[in-house]
Image (cartoon, rainbow, N blue to C red; front, side, top):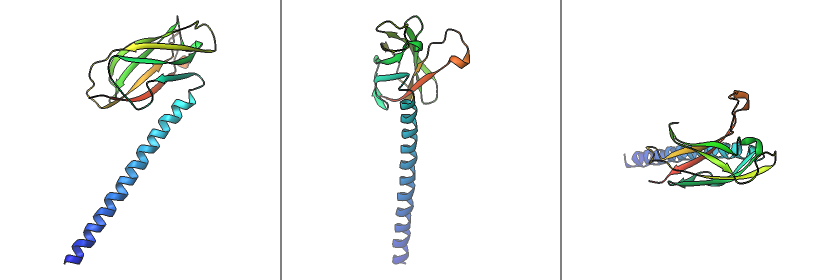
Length: 148
């Protein structure tokens, strides 16, 4: 009887270990996919701060660089959404130099937001699209965590 209990305990621990390893593998795969998407856009837009998966607080300063065609009238929209997809704040990033170029242009801005009901979310930097035509839409999602 005692031996059977030990075997069941060992089996239970093995199952927990396998489950934990699978969860960690899935989490790493998801993280790598997000980082890959960010890297794919680095020839168009890069964010210096905050870094992906950073813990953020309000007000948040965002800085980076984007190709001039990402802007319209020297700005482009940014929003913060929670993990449920609910928009909790919107603002604009502003070019720090002449934006009427195809070269990279530095940008920065500050966005204030209320406390989120979720632990995680995204900063979404949207290409300004005054035409409203969907074929000109583009965005970059930076995963973040909200500070408690």
